[in-house]
Length: 301
Length: 200
Image (cartoon, rainbow over all chains, first blue to last red):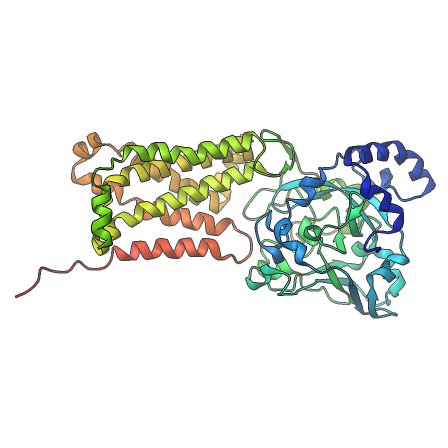
């Protein structure tokens, strides 16, 4: 059964990770030219990122609905039922409704995007996502002219998500983007990693990835997307507005009140693996800095 | 009674094996870290585990007096070992943070000044130093009654450690609150007035 990747990726399910990476390098140049969707330099800046292993990507997760430890999601998230899956798209759209995931996937092209994920906790890893641009889905739903923001909501099923028993956050998890951020070509809804179906602990079957923002903006297991003219509430901002702003762009000059954001620990670099200096907008400044021209990023953190 | 049984069972058990037993968990943890057995982020696992074990030992140290006073269990001969082990665990916790986690000297210094949870953790550690240095018979003799006064600093050290933990978690989490409640409870037991001699 086709679940969450389009058929053209299925051959990779049986491809060894190392071989797969090699193949990517060989094919990258050719396919970028053909527009076949492997991330070319413009969409994958900074280029030359070496992805973390599948093991690392799927065993070091923040998904508090399954527990607050980094290893809880890998242990417990398998209980999440991800098929069938529908996403309610509502608010200021021309075609509101419940969209079946299979239906969504049948009308988009899934691409690979290798992005660095910078967590607000000052660590980073590089993840080869498979996904499609959020803009392609929003265009299909028909964004009305007055809409200014996009709100997202994660599924909340107590019987499947043990972490919901604890009031760590005000469940369900909610996130939001400004419309121009949502429509940006770097912003994707991811359906897989390493050419495989999205593991539950990474936010199956459909999650947001906004590479120039801290990882928590990448809301997981999305069940609702609403277009609105008001800035929507966001889960971490509700929990602690002083520490987590609406924008949450990666910014080495604006520290988290409890820790520095100037550097980040590189996951998978080994015990003595040095930190790296955090890049403004996580290295995607050329593409996105213009979205924030004239804004005080210390105030709009 | 259970208390009598514990007292009888421990009568001839010296404290020194505790140092050997206490060295095993950190040794195992560090060995696991260096041999890739601690998962994707061994540095954080080692750092957090040493901090948490250190807090356990600090709390264990606070239970000795109430156990004797309210339950009649006499374990006071083990208290020095527990306290010193707690200190060494926290030293390791700190070393892992310095050498493996932050690594950058300027950022370490900035963190100590600017980050309240690190300031508090560091303050608790600094307050432990004189306690560790005077945890020997010679110091007890030399300091006399002042030794008791000095070692009341643990009443500050342990809650600071608990607050340090509470301040570093994200969101509303139960675990550090449980530790803090236990610490406050153990300190509150010290405020229970001593019963006067039975009046005729």
